[in-house]
Image (cartoon, rainbow, N blue to C red):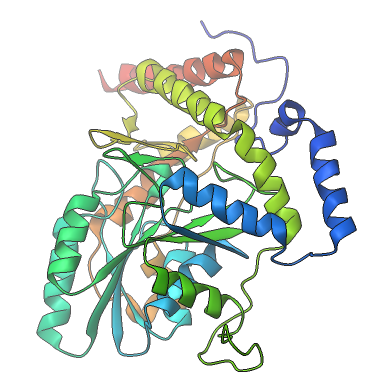
Length: 387
């Protein structure tokens, strides 16, 4: 028998709860400081955040920017990715991972996912590279590996394949800031890393924001130049390369600086909730595999279910919010149809079966129990029919 519905609503995300823990007065004090000094765009808070994020990740350099999409695009600009270049990218992800490739005029080559980790399949990456080589029309330039739902990719294999083919690897850590791969934190794993601070991300601002990480001073200088229209560091009215408006505003930086105070505890709480889901949910549901010696940031806790749409309706009827992330692989979307040149059966299957359930650091035990029991009741009905 299921327990009663929790006394308060369950949220899929909770973007406000940390304010009570940190103290709203600390945010207001930080905002007042900005109002007094007047450095509203890329001000001192942004520079402080650059330093603290670089230190947290263990990287030499971090450059904050206006959004996660900006971060991806700036990294590609720093690598001079351009028309005629091939960039290999996960298809089971949010559109921004491929959008940045198209923005700089390059060609996205979509790669299938591993059915267990949901991240880029190294074997399919090798096949995609071989196809591009055989056609001989594009230059092999870069790989964008997406840490979907916060789960680190198989970087050892992906970077080995990319580097052996003269390409660099950009980690799309939009959902995985705070994750770990073989003792390294996100930001310090691939050749460059881009992340997002959108409100639903593990380290979240109160609007759009992003950052680019690198250990290469020349790359960091290029990112900072491209972030402000391709500006020359010597002459601010000489734009020496094509760029964009990609600055972070100081108010977002101030928010993220406050959020950093509770970030480690929030990650621990995410791990605890994920472990309860892992242990408590029926085997009827497929669970995302985390590679050995790795930690997911659990931006989302996502299962697979053959009866996904029925399960989604059942959960919502019982007061449990959930979402299908993502119901269409990028290669099948209208604006990307011209690059839909490869068969990606795992991506297509995941798009029909994945379901994300409530996951945030402030999800109380009562709500966790209710989610687990409700899902297991659904599984019991399905198992009894199959018996």
